[in-house]
Image (tube, rainbow, N blue to C red):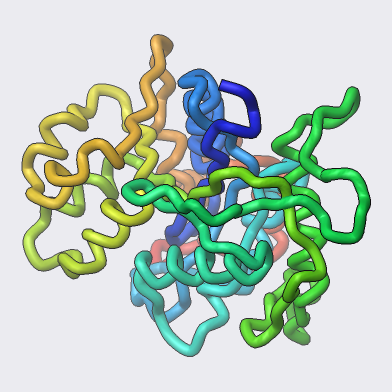
Amino acid sequence: MTENTKTHVILLSCGSFNPITKGHIHMFEKAREYLHKTGRFIVIGGIISPVHDSYGKPGLVSSRHRLTMCQLAVQSSDWIRVDPWESYQDTWQTTCSVLEHHRDLMKRVTGCILSNVNTPSTTPVIGQPQNGTSPIYQNTANKSVAIKLWGKMSENLGKICCVRPHMDRFTFVDENANLGTAMRYEEIELRILLLCGSDLLESFSIPGLWNESDMEVIVGDFGIVVVPRDGVDTERIMNHSSVLRKHKDNIIVVKDEVDHPMSVVSSTKSRLALQHGDGHVVDYLSQPVIDYILQSQLYINASG
């Protein structure tokens, strides 16, 4: 397959990120690496969406802190960004609504309909500029196609954003804004996929935890990329849920010949290490995140 005939993917990860760990970033990297190896996908971007404060999880620190820590964790990445939309809504948002928000946002940015796993769009998702300039989606000597495309999309997002007063490092897209036909892109297929660990996948099998119609949209319309913890039987998990069984083809399990200890994903272990002054906290958290936690006096007691 040529690069412009592969499915272009944006990975979206929802969660508490309380705090964000090295393992969370590792999941993005492993998922992108695996999807590229399949030869069918190009990952053009990653989005981290921290949960709203009203989620009610014990020990959950303010989204102001969690957003800042996430931003520090990805400051050296040229393809993962932090999105504050979920955190700044009036109340807690479902995972389904967050996915739908980003799908609708990309529709406005591109002016086209995004494809999903079941029904690939026949409408151009990314087209060519109408102003006669050369296509932005092309190979260059110094920059990969995926990063070039993601960067251009970010530019367009910046044209219709407004900034909330107390968090000036984050941009918020005006949902009433519309780029119209000012910019179109070269035709590609673009999908937003939910990135998660096997623990979230397993939660789909817990009766009453998830709204079944939401599960249908998440798995059936969008699709999931799962980075499992070592030793987890994802096949067994999927067979325990009728929705997961039904949409099994929409679930991509990241497989790796080399075992990677996904325990470093655990925010709980990170908080415990901080509370106990455990030097192994450097195994869980990046140094900028540790510095911010110490400076802000976060997680210094058992309540978070």
